[in-house]
Image (cartoon, rainbow, N blue to C red):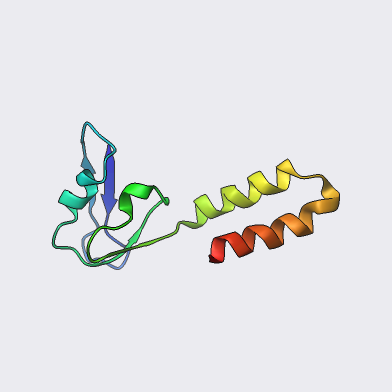
Length: 91
C-alpha cells in the first residue's frame, strides 16, 4: 500500500491510497509520473532516483534514529553518539 497526501496548504487536501502488489520503485515512479518537486517520505530507497523528485526526510523517522542511538550507548558516550548521528545525517 502506497499512501500519497497533498500538503496542508492545498485548498482541498487529498489522501490517496494506491494498492500495489509490490514495494518496487516502479510503483511510486508510475504514480508520480509528471510530478516534479519535493516528496516528503520515510527514506525508503524506492523513492530515490525518480526523475524530477527530490526526496526529503521526515522528522518522525529522524527522531527514531536518535532514539535508537541513545538507547544503544552507555550514558558516558551519549554526546559522541549524537555528534556521530548528526554527521551521518548531513552526509
